[in-house]
Length: 495
Ligand code: NDP
Image 1 (cartoon, protein in one colour):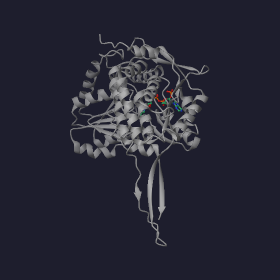
Image 2 (tube, rainbow, N blue to C red; image 1 turned 180 degrees about the vertical axis):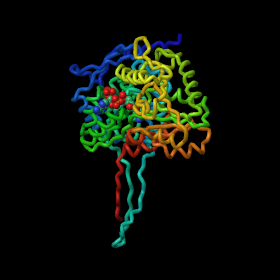
Image 3 (cartoon, rainbow, N blue to C red; image 1 turned 60 degrees about the horizontal axis):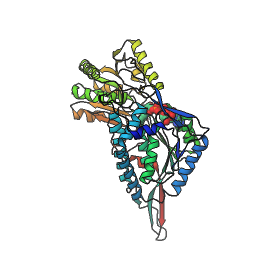
Image 4 (cartoon, rainbow, N blue to C red; image 1 turned 90 degrees about the vertical axis):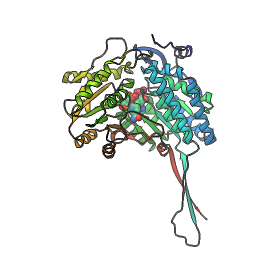
């Protein structure tokens, strides 16, 4: 049996109710409503978390503002980088504890929690820490005419926008929370983070670890709650920027609120309906292995997962047959069982939504594999493959955010590009071919923020990530995030 035993520290953490984290202090207001963190593998409550009251949201923003103007402004860039590196060290030191808590409340395989939630969080923090000392403006020679022999010079400064509201989804609550914390802190901003109501636990632990690392009180604050709390936070006049990762409808609502509140800046990392195009010369074994990894890890609940798979007609039978063989080998079970690689969906509402897509596919008679709930406690369903009835099939257009891939054959590359771009989304895409010259010619024609060639769903802190079309506004990672978290001030000097 390879079931992981919960660490004593994890048992202790979940034995208590939790609150909000404001200026280094935990707030559990007597009058606030409670949110149950549910273990999706059994559908039972793990512990309760207090939803932030309106007063607590105001307090968190006020304390974040105080830290922004005070202690964080006085912390040197080098020291900021050092603190992020220390937090990365502590995340690794407490890695197993964080991974277990995250798997418990998100249904994520313990391997994925260890490697991505913990491992990638530390890696992203270290990458961002390096930027702390490298955020600079430029020197410019203006062309003003000189009337009396005077001269001019100009330079730009990158100044932090202020307090950032970070709104985090439930699929990678720890790592996505870290993206927002790291981008904000390294540019000199402070943050108020609202985790998803479904996965509130690990970011509370991160806030404690950040204090231990030496990040001053008030720099990182966490308020819990549902969309109403998120709305209150993102429309708060003390917020200078909103960074949301979530669905398109939430992104549109948040964008409007932020604009109305104060022309508040937004970065919106939204959903996707990501295509993979397998050309005639594809290496089928490589593509199938990559697509199974990309589409079924964390039960497909990854924004960049391939959900639409277009295969050259001459290869589609072989690809589907090998996909089915791959899925048959998946071990379904508890996320805390190290032998398992496919667990439950993360919460009941989402489970029911994804099953609705399966029911639709079953009614159309085009399920090739899976498509049914699994009869056991918790929110388990079969990994699923569907053949689209035609290019208008809703499974080729609506984001399922679950373990469902939808296949359609194509005959030539013009048709492939047309199919790949036939979507309101534009987050990510992949091309699978042995002919790199062909791939390079197709890449500029694909409407997506990221195009992978012979791979899918790999994020790296050095490579910018974000969506085009309905998939969002702005970029995270690389140097691209700096534009979004700073204001550019021009200084012109006459001498
Ligand atoms: P949601 O849009 O439902 O929620 C995202 C966050 O926004 C949650 O914290 C949610 O709170 C909060 N929220 C909901 N309504 C509002 C509001 N009116 N104002 C402010 N905040 C609000 O997304 P999910 O959590 O269901 O995550 C899945 C979605 O996220 C998918 O569409 C996926 O593609 C996308 N995603 C995009 C990524 C990217 O990088 N582009 C990466 C990961 C996911 P609560 O949950 O408590 O209701």
